Length: 141
Image 1 (cartoon, rainbow, N blue to C red):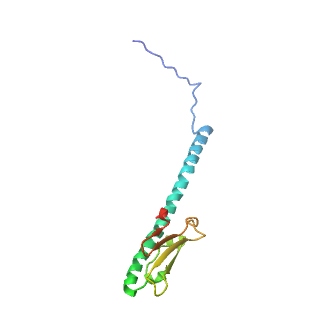
Image 2: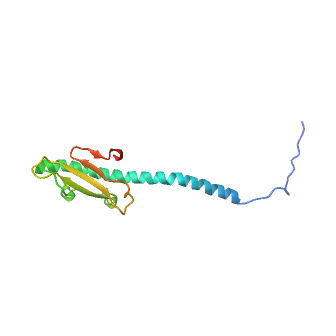
C-alpha cells in the first residue's frame, strides 16, 4: 500500500483570529432582515394583548351590569358603581363610557372602550358591547 506524504503549507496558511469585514456585514444584514420581519409581528401581538385586556374588562363590566339590573331594575351609567377595578394596562390605553337608555324605556346599555389619543392603541378604534352581548367591530373581538 502506498503512503501519502502530508506537507504543511505553513507559508500559505495564516493563523487568523476574529471575523472579516464581509462576514460581519453578512451577519448585520441577516439581523436587519430578521428585525424587519419580527418587530412588526411583535408589535401586533402587543397590540392584540392590550385589546384583549380591554375586552376582558368590558366583559366584566357587562356581567356586573346584569347583576346591577337585578338589584336596581335599571342599568347604571357610571363605571364606578359596578365596582370593577381596571388594571393599569387597561386604563393607560383606553377610556370607558357607559350609555344607558332613557328613563321609562326598556333597560339598555352600551359600553364603549375608546383608545386614548396619546397611547399606542390610538389607531385601533373603539370597541363596544351592548346589553344583548353584541360586540363591535366584530373583526376585533
